[in-house]
Structure formats: structure tokens, C-alpha cells
Image 1 (cartoon, rainbow, N blue to C red):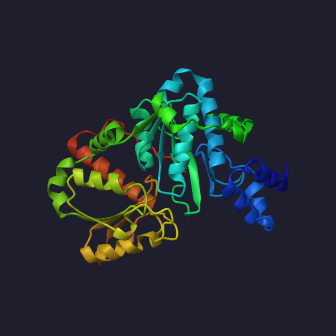
Image 2 (cartoon, rainbow, N blue to C red):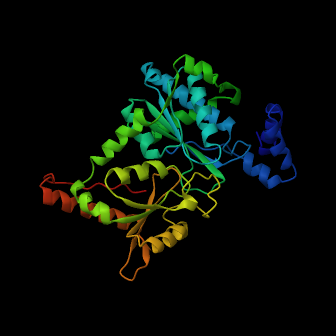
Image 3 (spheres, rainbow, N blue to C red):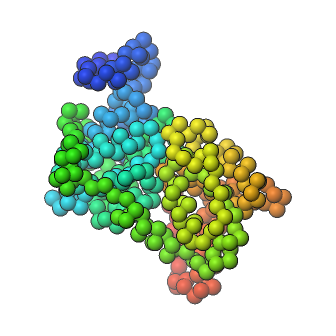
Length: 359
């Protein structure tokens, strides 16, 4: 099928969806736009799928999300009957259509007989990853496009170990997605899904409290917070994303009393209106944070991306300016601190090894 044929097919198949029809008719005279939207289908790999929001086979929309979820459900159901009961955990961030995509994914899975744990509001990727293991689920889904520009959204998948699906699994999921038609992906009624016990809404008591408790056990020298926690000044920005509540909570609970949040970037905003790109490793994303840091005399600045699996850190220099560290620099500093602390406490294992992934 050519891209033009695919375009015409969508106009006919989704004639009852006025918003989709109107969007497609609006580009009727733009051949390049039609080609870009329909020359291919969104790819699905170890990181799931990601694309610009909009109507089309090469766009993130409810039709492609439902179809991907049906393929994912088919894979789960083909592996082991017990996987249905173990279920899938679903989280989402602050991007456009994230809540809608999350609910659609949940209800398609329920229609296929798979139990779903759906978070009650936006959550970071690390909490989703933990939740998969904590709840003994078979898999997880996060609706996010990480630090991409606001016109993007995505669909990340995780397996039972809390990590992204390995290539051989993702390839099998993709094959099942491509074998399905859009009409094969059906949502169960939400009330029915809840009544049958297939859809379970989860929050702090099911996951977050245990996650925070586990994070606190990783502190190398927790006793330092008794003094440093009162003196240290931190500026934090969630850059309109999902890190706001959990990051502030953990900082408070470990004893850091002086945390200043960038108000302009505190609340969820799918437009990420204060930055060009919501990437905490981009110096431009720290403009407002550095201004606040100057005002309060902060020692360092933390910033997290929309799904809160990426952090940027800036530290105060001797001349009073703030320098944004690279990921490599942060990694080396953390490794040095962990090793020094373990050696001092006598908890360093014999023949210790540090492992690093290469991306």
C-alpha cells in the first residue's frame, strides 16, 4: 500500500472519528506531510515506540497505541497462562495524551483478560520499573517521550525484571502488532473492567511508600544528613514533569531542609512552555533554576526530565557561578563517593567490580 492509499484508507476507516478526519483533511494539499505521516508505521523496539502526536500510521495516536497494546497482549498471552493474573503495570508522565494513552492501553489489556495496575496520576519511570518487580507483574508500560520536544509522545515497555524488553522479545511483539488490524484492538468498558477485578488503580500505599523506603536504604552515609541536611541548600526543577512529588519527598525524608523549587517549572505542563527542550542535560533548561540559585545562595541544582529517569546537576563554583556537570562527571563523582564511603565503613566487597553500560 502506498502512503497515499494509506491516507485514503484512514479517511474511510475512521470516518466516525470527526477529529481525525478533520485533521487529515486539513493536510489534503500537503503531499510531503501526507507522505511523512503514512510512508511507514511506527517502529517498535527495546524502547517501545515513539513519535510525533497526530493522525497517521507514522504518528502517536490512540489507534496505534491500542494496536500496539493488542500485540503486546497477544505476546503475553502466548507465553504463559499465569502471566494474565500477574498483570501489567501502567504509568504515564505529563505529556499531551499521556493519561488517555495509558487508560486506552489498560482497557485493551483488560479486554484480553490481562490484569492491569494503573497508577492514579503521573509517575516517574523508576517507580514504574520498581512497581513491576514489587507487584510481581509480568510487564510494565510507561507513556512518555522522555526528554523529546512537546510534540512527541511514546510507549515504553518493560519486562518482569523491571528493565526494557530485550530485542528478541520486542521483535516478537512487533510481529504480533503488524499481524493485527486496528479494529482488532478493543477496549473493555472501564466500569466493567473494575467490576471484574481486571483494572486496579494504585497509588502511594501500593508502591510509592515501599519504593521510597528502598531508596533510603541505598544511602552510603545517612548519618551525614543530621548535620549536612540542615546546611545544604538545593534548587530543584522537575521541568514540568513527573519528578516533582517523589523527588521532593525523598529529599525531605532524608533530612534536607532547604529545598527551593522553581515555581515556573513546578507543575505539569505538556507544552514545557519555559524551555525549548525538557532535557536537564541542556544548559538552557537550567536558566530559571540558576536564577533562583543565585537568589537563595544554593550549593547545587537538580533537574529531572519529564519521566524523571534523567537528571542534570549543577554545582556552585568558587567564583559563585554554577557549572552543569556532564553525565560522565556525575558518574565518576558518585562512584568515588560510594567507594570511599564503603572503604571507610568496611563494607566494600573483596574483588569489587564496577559495571557500566554503553549507550
